[in-house]
Length: 186
Image (cartoon, rainbow, N blue to C red; front, side):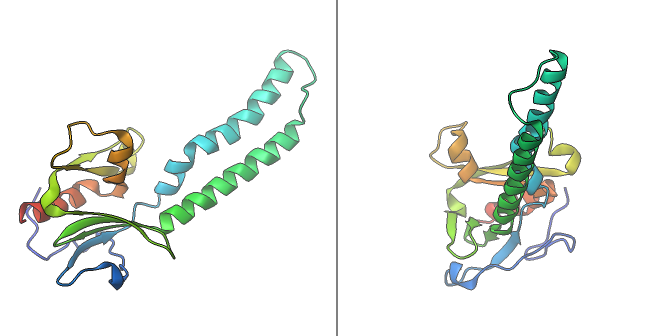
């Protein structure tokens, strides 16, 4: 991967604005990005899968065993559709309210539109950044950045790794290069 000059970002990476009150004195934003819009279906897929499969299974079971199902398939389908729409709306809110920020001093994960939940970590505390991609993310060109912190055991717990991660990032290799170079300069 080519070297990115200090302070220069590829013109094709989307940059979003960060509320100024989250910055400290002398802190400079190097990168501020949102997860890919694929975040919405990727975090919603378990509910979507159940919403599609449950009515199909109920209907197929009734036809296969030639019995009248004790539940109304149309009602189950409507409830499942409502659950799917509600999950997609919740995921869209989560996507809208999520921001990943790299500054000259720290990394941040900001959640929330009104009340902010900020995870931040000084760059000096980061041992390494690992770019990963789930099987479903690879064809979409997505991945996640997991920040391994100094003083933590290898293979940190899943919940802690989620807190330290930037998930469903577009162009993850490009973002990984920028983050790694910035951490290397500290």
